[in-house]
Amino acid sequence: MSETRETLVSLNNAGVCMSDKWLVRGVSLEVSRGEIVTLIGPNGSGKSTTAKMALGVVNPSEGSAQCRRDIRVSYVPQKLAVDWTMPLTVKRFMALSRTANENEVQRALSSTGTEHLKNAQVRNLSGGEFQRVLLARAVVNTPELLVLDEPVQGVDFNGEIALYRLIEEIRSELNCGIILISHDLHVVMS
Image 1: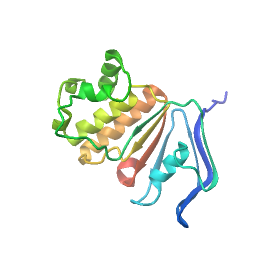
Image 2: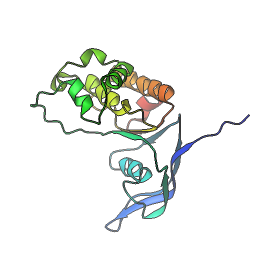
Image 3: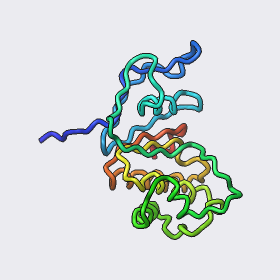
Image 4: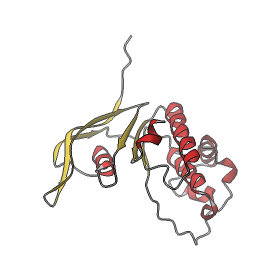
């Protein structure tokens, strides 16, 4: 019996050209439920542009991009501008993303191993703790597609491995598609 894959986003020979310069060109990919697709390359190679094209944020200059119309997407940015002088607890930070009830926030924090941090100040978190809280914030609305842009930035090597394992657990638990953007092939492959 063959398994039916639900395609969430796809690109077909797509590219983006701005000011007569190709940012990315000739990209074809498909992301289905339960699948992790990793975009790997050096800084400036078009990984983030490719993800934005797949999500319909940037229109392709050539080729085609399709994204399921009613898809629930969560995005964890490479960098998040937070005013670190502002007193903000993890619990309050979680509530900023959308109207989430206490049970949903608790479930998301628990799924990323950060429930013990809910009353901690965001500014006092380590790099790894903050990345886990960002993941919790992304999964609070049970996304069908999760886009992670350099999710281990600012985390030590052991923390990177633990975060990649956590991402795999999230994929398995939510059966969501994941677009993972990274410049570090060795860590992603391990």
